[in-house]
Image (cartoon, rainbow, N blue to C red; front, top):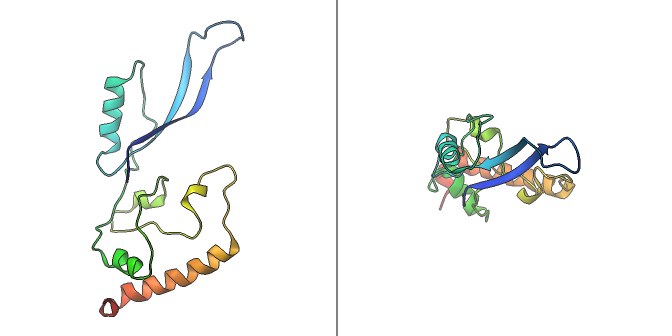
Amino acid sequence: LGEVKLTVTQIEGGKQHNAVPAHVDIVLDVRVNDCYTNGEIAEILKREAPCSLRPRSLRLNSSSIDPGHSLVLGGKELGRKTYGSPTLSDQAALSCPSLKMGPGLSLRSHSADEFIEVQEVVEGISIYVALLERFLKPERFG
């Protein structure tokens, strides 16, 4: 999934333009990879940060699927490439093997101008159908 990513997404502080603020609130968005839990990263940040930290939530950890799982193999057979998604989805709440696959470009997800092309949706439907056919009939592999 790549490295753990930390992004400052909100900064609030100060009462006037010509004075150093006595207090600043900063919100960090931390994307954890499959090597750490949210709790482990929170402890590292608390230990290393030059300020006090309070996690908003530790509930949604990263997820992964075995590269040999039939969904993954079926996707590869269809020419799909595997990757670690940099964005969070409801998949993080699942407790079963799952993969995140959608039409469009992941880079456009969660951006100010997020969009998906109609042709990407049409192509996605055919890919989903083909993948499910392979998953539901594993003897078709090979």
